[in-house]
Figure 1 (cartoon, rainbow, N blue to C red):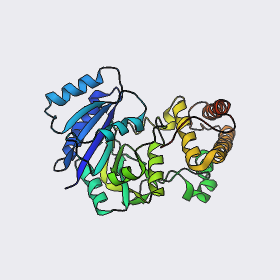
Figure 2 (figure 1 turned 120 degrees about the vertical axis):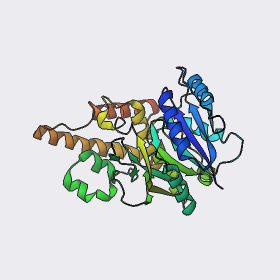
Figure 3 (figure 1 turned 30 degrees about the vertical axis):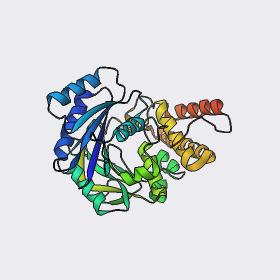
Length: 326
């Protein structure tokens, strides 16, 4: 029987993390393995609260809590849980990454596991993500590219039709099957894939880390599948959208920059930024002429330009940043 390690990352949301853990325990019934909760250096008493709850609820045989010791972001925290492994020291055949604000339905985890068992070419599998009211959210995507940096920011019908096959956003697939990448809120990974390419690239603090993992998987010969039969409720799926941010944080720009430099080179990354800003500028001009809201956070393009300028000044034209990608 295959063994499954579920990793849930906590950062200052212990009550929500416990709710996610409880949902995972129900969905893991009949599946051999366990759950590791990683407190990502919350510093607010979360770790003690989690440990006490695990003990008082009698979860000790299936759940344990570990401390990351440093908040290195989403990928780094999940890598801590992957490295911790099963409580008996044994090897898991599959690793399941679950957000602390995501709650798998009863059959969700088993559906991912069964799919990966039945499709040996697939190294990763992701779920259908829903809001509590049943609204479906995009959880399957195409890889970002230079052409997607025109289509996405421009938001102009004729351009979108011409570049539709290059749009990162592909809607919710009607069928289970291969895609470029899937959302990291509910993501199952074959251990052979981790052996082959390692875990998450810890240069990404937040965003783009699952995109990068799926892209590295493809380069290593593994597919990524979207599994529609696996349904997970995610209460954070709305608040994480760019359009909802008051200002885009620097770590988003840093993750985007690292992704394009890693997979398209320094010149490709520079071209991607220029294309994004040019297309985004045309979109804002059209919105200004038609008196429409452009739909982006305030100062988005200016913040992107300023971030890139600061990085250029810091690293120089050579682009040496001191990062060591996975």
